[in-house]
Amino acid sequence: MRFPDEVELEDGPCPMGCVAEDTRALVGGDRLHRLPGEFTVVQCQACGLMRTNPRPSPRAISFYYPEDYGPHQGTHSPNNRTNGFWKLAAKKIFDSDSRKVPPVAPGRMLEIGCASGAFLARMAAQGWRVEGVEHSSRFAEDARAQGYIVRIGPLEQLPTPTELFDLVVGWQVLEHLHDPVSALEKLRDWTKPAGWLALSVPDVSAWEFGVFGANWYGLDLPRHLFHFTPRTLRAVLAKTGWKTERIFWHPNPNNLLQSLRYCCLDRGWVSAAHYLLDVVEGRRQRVLRSLLGFLVGALHASGRMTAWASRN
Image (cartoon, rainbow, N blue to C red; front, side):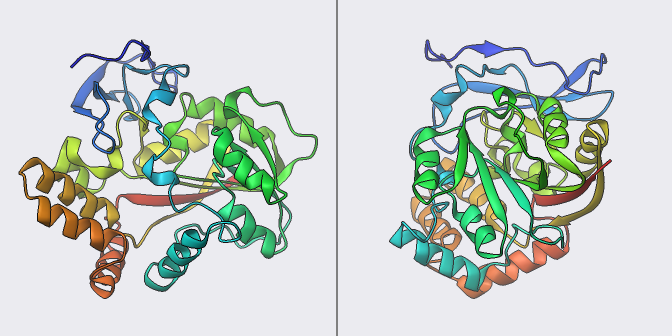
């Protein structure tokens, strides 16, 4: 498959500094937006961390983030998006909240990948002094319009803040970074000695990944540059000065439902695919979806996990 001229690929070595050879895990493409290109996922034979390699360079990756990039939809603050309010209300009723933070007193919080500021607004209402980092200027301006301090640009290029943070959060962000090790080291330097980190990432140790392979929704090639298991996530956190205190799995069935939807589309079962999308978005089978989410979360099988880590 031919790549567009603007998509420059680069080789990305294991960020853990390993020198062992990689093994190929799979080859897949962009299932979410069907943009061109095929990408290989490899696994480091030394540490076990999986990554997309070769990958779009930092300069070229924006090609794979169109304005309607799915995970950004629904991240709008209810203060300035009517549809966002109703989506948030439905989510609160039918889903257990996966954006949980450690039980610490409100202080200064930084959100990496804050989008339009929905989570900033929630934490500010709880007494936190919040700031954000967002790569997309369009979403960042939405958050700024609500009065929040949001720095625009790649995390790796931002200067050290003038005041350290008590808590740093990032929801489904770490897997998108070109160098998660240096990013986590930087965030440690930005955090107070007793500070905390809360990160959510897809979990490739889930049985869904083994079943669906390149059709697994949590893979999201080529935007996901790294693919973590609980073991490799703990290892990356330890290497960067963080102590993993807890890992929990989200009671969310969307990886499973969306993966089934991809399989239906491949077989031409359009009606079934539309039905599954309705279930994902809460228009059908809300109670069943909630029960399924509880089940996969309890079995650590949802393919979505959050880690809490304290600063070493």
